[in-house]
Amino acid sequence: MNNNVLVINCGSSSIKFGLIEAASGKRLISGLAERLGDSGARVVWKTQSDGGTLSIPDADHAHAIQAIVEIPAAKTLLATPPMAIGHRVVHGGEQFSASTQIDAAVLTAIEDCSNLAPLHNPANIVGINAAMAQFPAVPQVAVFDTAFHQTIPNHAYMYAVPYEWYDRLGVRRYGFHGTSHRFVTQRAAEILGLEYENSSFISAHLGNGCSAAAVRAGRSVDTTMGMTPLEGLMMGTRSGNVDPALHQFIAQALGMTLEQVTTQLNKHSGLLGVSGVSNDMRTLFAAAADGNERAALAIEMFCFRLARGVAALTASLNQIDALIFTGGIGENSAPIREKCIGYLQLLNFELDPAQNAIHGRGRAGNISTSTSTPVLVIPTDEEWMISQDCAALIGR
Ligand code: ADP
Image (tube, rainbow, N blue to C red):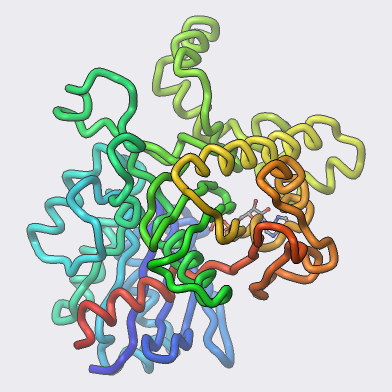
């Protein structure tokens, strides 16, 4: 056994993977198997010195994991089995408030949560089973997106709906992106020289999915996502908050089933739905610069709704040590940060344009003026966090 952790993040048609030396955090290999189930399925990977692409036509998740471990560089590195395999699992319901070593009972509990995350948990389970078949003697660990948010108090996680829905069906807010919110708030405390247990942050994870969280004394106390990742902020293709009466209205007006309306809200809304151009923020900026008004509107809405989400989270805090931006958009888009902060002047946020321009893209730092409530950009690293959880659970 060595100190390496294989991190696996199974999506519905892709697997992100990485082999990380837990003690140093060094990434020995990282890659992506994508378009699984399709004739164009392939694995793309890189090590510190080289990389490559392997075509795996029609491969499913199990075949893809087999192909990943057969990559020459991986084969050499995995000749000594890793210390642990860490799996990102999207939904842990109320059963899991921390990362957990997987056994038969844990696997059943993850399966039980599938009704809350029908698009995500089944793919995670396939990944766990495939990794177990490949490495039967290596401990496997589940790291849940929801776990960090299990400290949210009931007045914040309950919906104002009949209580039996919660009791019988688990209808409540769970929150997601927990591993990322945990990572960036820990880093923020380090950067600002604060004790994590004595700090207070709002973090905004802005990728294809977007959520913000209030984190007090190292514990999540509120977040914008809900029972599913559809609630909260405007995202790439997800609407975020809408009037709950919208489902029935659109179903009747357009003759859709409820499932079809939900699909519209998950896959055809957000930046894509409003702009009609793209869910990719870079493409939207290019279109807006060319005079596309709906692209400009989508960008403005994204920032306004983000600012409104951040402001709502302040109800759970009595001070703000920093607002943190992370994720593909949060780390890379200085104009999004600037527009969002523009809506938050009442909370004493003010950006330093020069600092805003140079931070991000892998470089963490403070982008606010000296009199502002601090605003930090911190590149997230969920894979590293997963490797650390595995080391803490298995390594000793
Ligand atoms: P995921 O949530 O799938 O992990 P990412 O965190 O990589 O996604 O974020 C993807 C988003 O980041 C996309 O909307 C993309 O346009 C945006 N993004 C990446 N680079 C930039 C950039 N330089 N400027 C603006 N947006 C960017």
